[in-house]
Length: 223
Image (cartoon, rainbow, N blue to C red; front, side):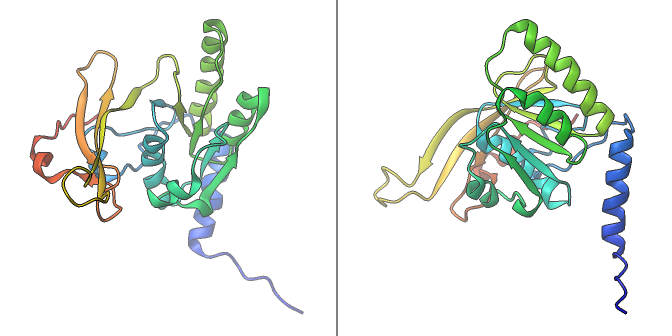
């Protein structure tokens, strides 16, 4: 007779975390973020973060998935999973629902039961609908210990991340090939001045990092 192997300690902890999430703790916790963004933003469960680019969504998803958290992508059929992997997102811990239809809020609410980070591309809705959805999903996120990333407008979000400027490096300098993409990323929160940082997105080594010549001028505004 064969005997099933007991799960290892890491698997046991993961199962315990899932049980606690389904029970609902209502306690917000900080999630990991890539090192270049640490001085500007500490994302937390229960919160919603707006991005104007899928690249920024990938940045917010990368560190949590690498740390063992599950992430999900909802309503974004053109979200590049291969590109996300290049930014560090662990695809073995990624759930994709590219076309949830009109029931996308139910899909997001359901995923909050089992994943820590949900990226959604919401369709256009009226202000009344947006306010109602925000209240409903915010409550679910807080109860289930999950964070929402909205690729598109979302009322009363914790922070808004945007790419203020972008330029491909290597062109026009006689090399004839692209070596990296330099961007200025802004983080805006209500009642605070905007924070900015210049990032390779990605750099010549295909990694996300600060642009060295202005790294000393980073605006460190920890949450």
